Length: 262
Length: 67
Image 1: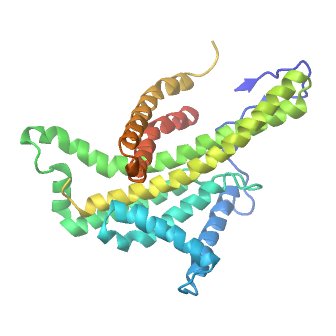
Image 2: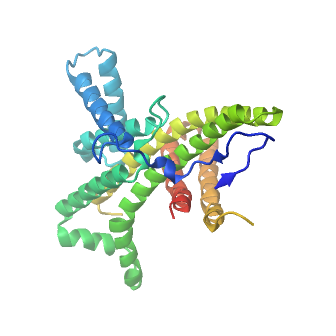
Image 3: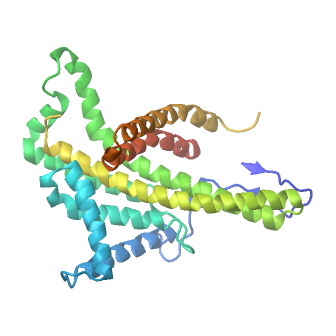
């Protein structure tokens, strides 16, 4: 996708950003690229944050403890208690870690000098979705027995028996196949599309402001830069929202496996 | 006409989620208008519904680039 410049004299063509901008050179071994560095850093940050926030628990919390309590309390009250109920307390450590990890990896997309959301490569969301999938299936099978779990999923009570041949495959596919797939793709492509928009705005602004000459280029470049700044804030909101939605849906699936009356 | 069929496909695919999200937030606004105290309760449901409806449009833009 090449685009001609707007002004009469330009030093080079504009290279429109595309999926190739998500590939990075190897820094040390075959696995150590920039996204991998961000993932390692994110893991260390989340681990150290919660460890030091919980270390000296006092009744009147200091700043770090208050921050850790806010994050954990948010996941516990707004996500687990709403979606699962009283039994959800057991799953709050997993959900809180999930939320914090995805949020940190997403926010890396707008942190200066880092500026790459590590969740835009499909591997991390895929494995997080697989972990959530294993957890909610395991919980459902443990609660209802192997046969009972699939029976309650595919043949829900209160439905006229004529619809069962139509309903059962749809329900089975929807629960066992589509849930982890949509969890993965939703997170991945939200971060992918957001990063692509930011790249387009900022690189376009850089090209229009620096490498073209003339008033039209300057005006268009300024508009593009302004739009890039606005989109950065919007992107931050979307990143936190996607972390919240991933965690909330995982909690809802766990809750659905625990209480099997639809 | 230049361009790729992927983008035309994405444009068509974005109609459905656009309508869906409009309906979701229309319901949210109506609910808050009738009962302002329900605002925080409905907000969680609205955000969840928004993310679910948006997922298809986002999968559309992602696959338009990736395929």
